[in-house]
Amino acid sequence: VDKPHPYGGENWNEERVRQELKNNGINPFSNVYDISISADFNSGKTNSISLSGDGKSDSFGGDEFKNWFNLRAPGNIQIVGPLFNVEKR
Image (cartoon, rainbow, N blue to C red; front, side, top):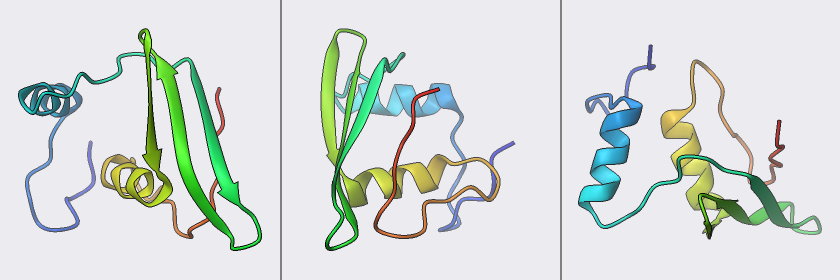
């Protein structure tokens, strides 16, 4: 079960998120095969996240990825600071 929306809005399940992305001309990933980060360890900030999967790739700013992740993260899992890593399981 999703946690409550932090801004008081409605919660969307995975299918609703996919449909809204498609409605806005964005083809969502179904499978991610590789993920990497670019970070500035001197300033302590993750600059970008790069994803590859489904025959395409895309990159997002670290702040943008963090905001999206925190909106959809289960339970109390959150990215708190500006420097973070991602790992492939």
